[in-house]
Length: 110
Length: 115
Image 1 (cartoon, rainbow over the protein chains, first blue to last red):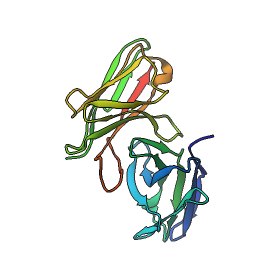
Image 2 (cartoon, one colour):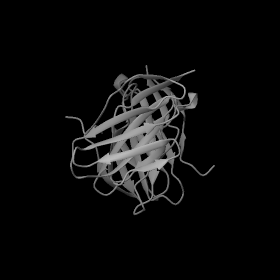
Image 3 (tube, rainbow over the protein chains, first blue to last red):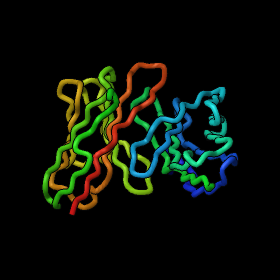
Image 4 (tube, chains in turn blue, green):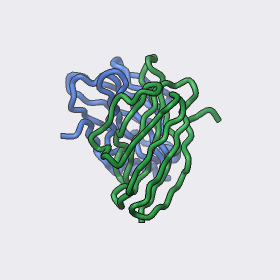
């Protein structure tokens, strides 16, 4: 079983829509959680860390459910510039090894 | 630019040749990671260093792969006797440990094509 699983999509949504991605992880000892964004043929860039109480950054909201071992990312009021692949990342332990999901592809359509 | 840098950005090599990639992390970061990413997949962990010590290696890292970080600053990843299956994007990332979180910052990657 993979450490991190994501729905690869693709998600095609109109501008202004709200879209949500989920990610599940298999190791209950996982300690740190992140969402990264990756544009085509570019490196992953940190979008946001995910905290136990949930956190928000502008149009982006991340939540963690430890009991069910999943994290989510909600994007409100989608912009064309949000089109990218969103990678769910989990760290087990003290920042040594990070496990990436395969990514969820989002295309925002005008 | 004080971000993570990698060199070269692209490398085309013939099967059986050796290649070496370099990564310069963010200067105050003591941890440095190497990943490999193929099309449609997320980055896969290869190895990481804390300062000059290589603390963990993935089972993905065959004997043909070796990484060094001799002075705890830049790192090199060498692949010997390259195979077509080595074609991928090789990403380097760095982070500060301990820190408020374990956020990693990635370099632009080196895209390797083995012909």
